[in-house]
Picture: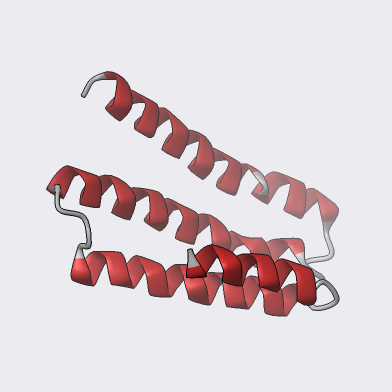
Length: 103
């Protein structure tokens, strides 16, 4: 719950600082992913693995957000690179659907 509140506060109060927003989100995501890998808070090992997979995919996608800032001013490169986070999230949805269906 605290993590979600921090993301919302980040979006609301740092709208003029998109780079800072991205770095804070990446830091939060990395901290939560490390927390999951280190402490394994779920009782069921399967739930831990699913949650770790989902958070790892989100972490990888969040790392790609910097390409969409002023650091890269080539819109064609941004468009082409946009397929990377799209593919990550699509594969996450497909894998989670398969796990839910065949479990």
